[in-house]
Image 1 (cartoon, rainbow, N blue to C red):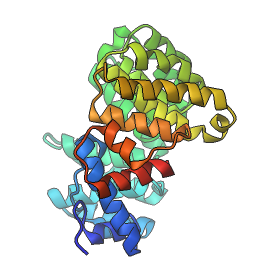
Image 2 (spheres, one colour):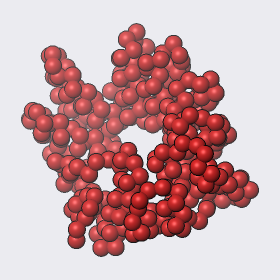
Image 3 (tube, rainbow, N blue to C red):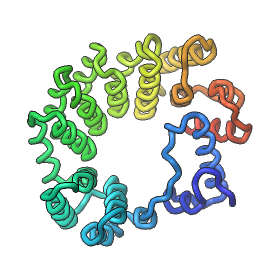
Image 4 (cartoon, rainbow, N blue to C red):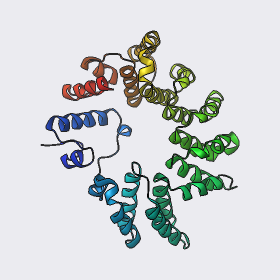
Length: 328
C-alpha cells in the first residue's frame, strides 16, 4: 500500500492502525491537513528509537542504559525516546536516580548545556518530584533565563503545586519570563490560573500566549473572554482565539449539548466570517473555525469544507477532511 505522508510502518507501530481502511483514512487526512498549513502537523520523520517508543515502559531500562553508556546523537535520541514514553508512564524512582546521575555528571563541565537540558526535560516530563521541587525554588532567581527555564520544566512536568507562584510571575515587569510562565500554566491545566490569564488578556498583555493557555485549561467560563478576539482582534489573535475555542468546545461537549441557542449563535457568527470574506483568515484559522463548527454540532458537507478552506483539495482529500470534522 503506497502512503503519501507517513510510512505504513509508522501508522502501524506509532499510531496503532492496522486495517487497510484505517490506514487509507489516516493518510488521506494527514495529506489534506498538510495542504492547509504545515504548522498543523509535525514533519513525517521516523524516530531512530521508534520501536522502543512503541513498547512503552518495557523499553525504559534499555533506553536508560543507552543514555548512561553512549555519547553523541545516539544518546540524545535515547533521551528523546524516554521523553515520549514518560508522557504516558512516569519515570520510576530508580530510573530517575540513574538519569540524574548522568545529568549531574554532565553539569560539572563546560559544553554540556544541551545534554543537561535534554535530560532535565525528560525527567520533568516523567514527573520526577526531586527535579520539579528544585525548579519551584529556581523561580525566585534573579536571572530571567533561569526563571524561564524553570517555568518550562514545571510546565513539562504539569506540576500543579507551582501554579500560585507562576501566577505571580505573569507581569509586564517579567516580560521575558512571562511567555514561558504562561505556557507552563497552560500545560499544567489548573483553572486556578484563569483569573490571572483573563486579567492579562483584558489588559492586552501577551494576548496570544494567554488565549492558548486558556484553551488548554479548557474551562467554559473562558469563552466570553475569548469571543471579542474573534470579532475585533488582529489576525494572529483571531487565530489563537479560534484555537482556544476549539479546545474548550472539545472539553465541554456534554455541557454545550444542552445549550442549543448558544451553539446556534456561535455557529452563525463563525459561518458569517467564513462566508463574507471581509477579514483576513489564514489556512490555520479556517481549519480551527471548521473544528469549532463541528464541535458545536454544525453539519459540514464536502462542498462546504472545500469552500471554507479555500484550498485546491482533491475530492478524496476533502472527503477525508469532511469525515474528520464530522467525527470531531
